[in-house]
Length: 148
Image 1 (cartoon, rainbow, N blue to C red):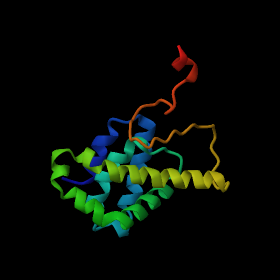
Image 2 (cartoon, rainbow, N blue to C red):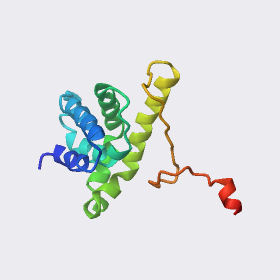
Image 3 (cartoon, rainbow, N blue to C red):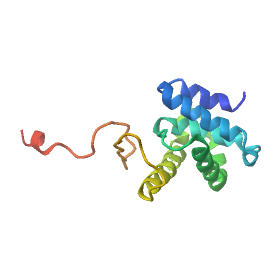
Image 4 (tube, rainbow, N blue to C red):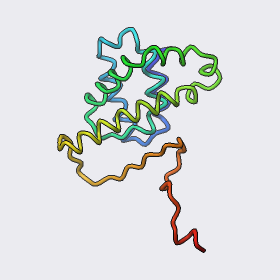
């Protein structure tokens, strides 16, 4: 199995714009010689993180962040990849690494916005959750509704 297929399967479940963006990121990663020996570690993490990666940075910039992440965490990712938990449920086993990758990319986006290195065409709202839930609700209840 070509390891890129893991990511390609995950991209089928995403909106077309996000899937195309992540495909361009993966194309950049496939040309990076640093990852020649580690691409098998890369695609499972990227597939698990795909839903939470915003298409804000240029694909090459995002690919650079992914490369740095993989170089920093290759040993831990390999440990997860070759674990029994990954055999039972690969996406679930990769969730902690996916969350870290998403956090690194989100931090880079926010830093570039704060430094004026990045300007968004339209305002966006990002919500970060510490509890790992995938709900699109604000973490605090509506006080007026709670009183009823």
